[in-house]
Amino acid sequence: MLALLGLSQALNILLGLQGLAPAEVSAICEKRNFNVAHGLAWSYYIGYLRLILPGFRARIQIYNQFHNNTLQGAGSHRLHILFPLDCGVPDDLSVADPNIRFLHELPQQSADRAGIKGRVYTNSIYELLENGQRAGVCVLEYATPLQTLFAMSQDGRAGFSREDRLEQAKLFCRTLEDILANAPESQNNCRLIVYEEPAEGSSFSLSQEILQHLRQEEREVTMGSMETSVMPGSSVLSQEPELLISGMEKPLPLRSDVF
Picture 1 (spheres, helix red, strand yellow):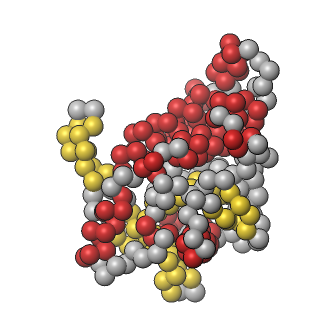
Picture 2: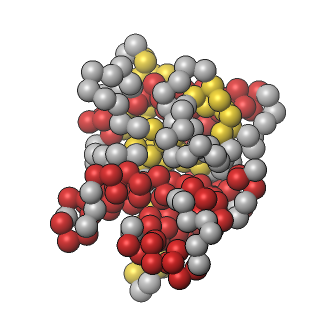
């Protein structure tokens, strides 16, 4: 299966580059800006996720000691990363959905990085409302490199069209997924929530999408499976391997949206 192939070979097949010489592949990737998404994914992992994930659960334990075990359940112990494929990333999550409400900050983590002493990393905890009542609590944030892709698509010097931006977002997501699948520090510590921005008039609710993930994670624990994720969706990234996107009522298996 394609899911078992190496990242490079898989991307070649997905992007129609199979059968080309390495120099030809390199030229096409440069022309179509594929290296941008690839670099962003690795930068996001090495410069951020690889730093915060190893101590993530310890920070949750400290938080729970002072907040009456607010973060409970399998889903509450993971970093949930929102991944809108249109790269629309508001700075205030309540703008995206008023049923997503900021609650607290996790205890900060600091590290010396590139000459910056005590650089601080913070993560935010949100409560999710359903019918006006708290229905879930989790650590939640957008994948910040999506803001870079969006900004590049708005700057004529970058040469990005809206279609290019979508292609870049998909490639970024696929690359990050492959990186995390083989990163020991990410195991069971984070989950990608990938979705398409709904069309105008759609009934899509981001808070409900997140709650669906949290409830699915609880079912996975009950079933004794933490390695295989099941979630609703229909793939807009590729036909195979599939990273499934919201849009279907029945759950379908994912390869690795939970790490």
